[in-house]
Amino acid sequence: MKKIENVEYDKLLENFKEILKRNKLKYTNQREIILKMLYSNNEHFTPEKLYFLIKEKHPGLNVGIATVYRTLNMLEESDIATSISFGTQGKKFELGNKPHHDHMICKKCSEIIEFEDKAIEKRQEQIAKERGFKLTGHLMQLYGICGKCQQTDMEE
Amino acid sequence: MKKIENVEYDKLLENFKEILKRNKLKYTNQREIILKMLYSNNEHFTPEKLYFLIKEKHPGLNVGIATVYRTLNMLEESDIATSISFGTQGKKFELGNKPHHDHMICKKCSEIIEFEDKAIEKRQEQIAKERGFKLTGHLMQLYGICGKCQQTDMEE
DNA sequence: GTCAGTGCAAAAGTTTTGCATACAG
DNA sequence: CTGTATGCAAAACTTTTGCACTGAC
Image 1 (cartoon, each protein chain N blue to C red):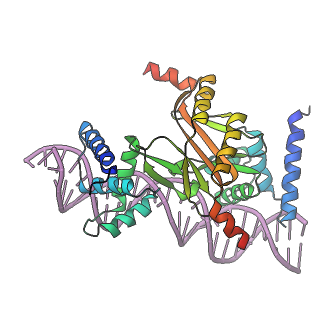
Image 2: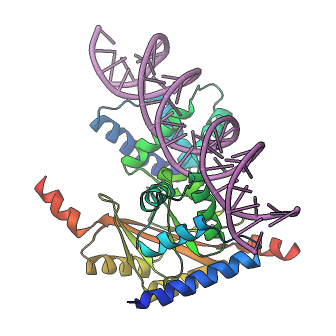
Image 3: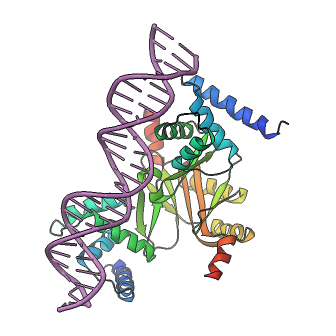
């Protein structure tokens, strides 16, 4: 029972291996697992969370937190993953292979909702151009209270 | 020779004192200096930078880094200042009394250019509404290479 | 005088690094 | 085999906290 998503994953993996090869890096078990975890859990991970999740799901594999950090940084540098900053509380990572999108973050429960808006993207390009800026990317985060937490608030 | 900006600063200060009073907090020398520094330097500070700048400009005042952190956090909680996250590298603070704006950040030199765009703001409101989100704020950062660094790049 | 604020140093997090060992190519 | 990757522990940072003392009200 092959899911259609696997095709996507195969492509991602292929791309990953190619980048490794191009940079004379090695395709290790740890790197594979980290990539797979990022892919199969449609979530945003802190390095620490990812580390514990790997230990949980792959008890056989001996991973160190350092490897998780190293790999995530490597993935980000190769544009495979991207990160979102949370001030003092560190970063959360996600794969960057999805169609572009931005994030709406709940201040209460930290849940992240993804969205995408062409109109805003276009406007951003224009703004950058007007100011002699060569745009390479952007980060847009909307903060607020998600539907669920709005209800919880009322109960307080 | 009173600058017109001083009127603005006076208002800011008044507001600050009022908030302090309302919360039974004290108006200390350290707090005043931190506010003034944030105001008079039209920059975005990391707590550390601010700390050293204060030591430099006010050698008489004995400040601790802890106080800088405490004050910045307090200012942020009272909505007098806001912060921008920079991943692992911490936060930068600025006063929040300016008209709302967003930031364009140069990946090379970390310079921050401010801008403002009503069209995007409106669109954001709409997006949040569509998803049952109660919007309380947002962060938009455009990344790229500023004009200056584009030139430097060519010389490399 | 009282109680919040401060500096200092210690502590708590988070992320990175050094090094000997393991393992991919 | 060679040299990169890894785990571990130590180090490096950044931010927060505990405490005795200072200073605002």
